[in-house]
Length: 177
Image 1 (tube, helix red, strand yellow):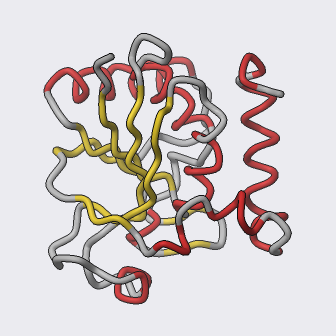
Image 2 (cartoon, one colour):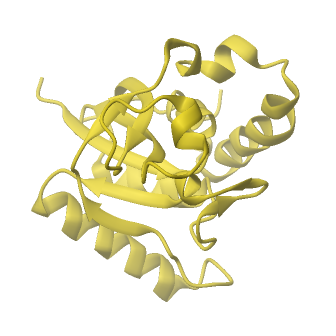
C-alpha cells in the first residue's frame, strides 16, 4: 500500500486532528508546526506568533480509501477558511488556514477545490486559505498528540472541538458512528 502525506492548517491543531481521526483511510496524524523560519519551535514560541509557523496536522493517508480531494473538502468544511489568521477566539498567524502542498498534483487539486467552493458560494466571504509549498514540519510536543481523545472533558474540547465534530458528522454522515 502506497500512502500520501498532507499538511493542513485549520486553526488549532487539536480540532483538525480530532476531525481527521474519524476519517477512514487516514492512517496516522501528527499535530505540529509548519511554514515558519525557526527550527524545532516549541509551542510557547509558536503561540507568541513570531516564528512564522502555523499549527498544522500531518496526515498520512491511503488514497485508495480516501482521496486527497475528499480530505480537502473535509478540511474546508470543518473550519472557517474565510477568516484571516484566526479561528473563533484563536487569533494570530499560527491559526491561519493553510494547505502546504507536497507536489504539483496536490497544489492543483487544492486550487481546484478552493475555486469550486468559491463558485458554489458555500461561504459568505471569500476563502483566504493559503496554498503554499511544503517547506518544513516539526512535530508538536507529546501532550498535543491525540489531545481531544485524552482531554475531551476539558472546557476547550467541550465548547470548541465537540461542536466541530458534530458539524463533521452532519456534513460527512458517511463517517458518523
